Image (cartoon, rainbow, N blue to C red; front, side, top):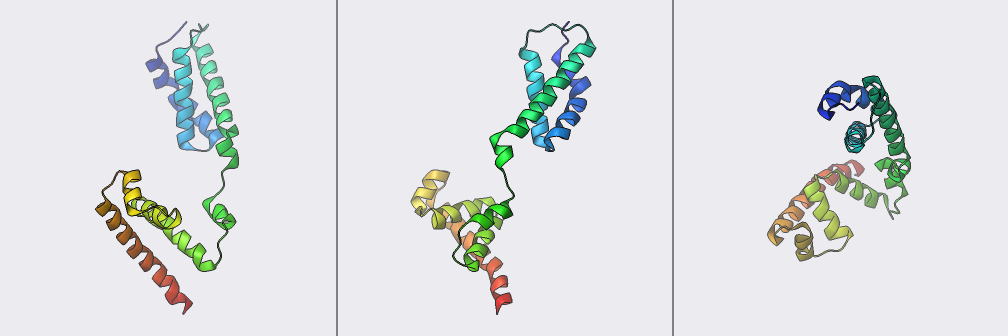
Length: 160
């Protein structure tokens, strides 16, 4: 017995998601697990005895896939950003604060600031890597510097 995948998705998506979420504790990973489970059903040629057998099979596959997600290198070795920052070798507290301020910038400014100051890329090289014009890179650097100055100005005023 095989049922259409659209029908199974309507009936069992939520229950598979909840089961996967209980194990992964992450919405995106649980959604990926459910999608992979239905994909495996779709590509398999297996015949099932009944709808209950299909449901049990789907649930077992989802649970196994969720457990596998938790065993990946990435999940086992991730750590909070704050803990990672503490392991970086900053010479002074100001260097550490500057790095944290850079991380707090919006992504489009953070990336060009990082490439320019930490990776020593030129404006031209950054433009090539990010597929931007050189003038756009210069604008982002200028705005990023201004945002950093504002963020760090408050901290420097507190120190005085």
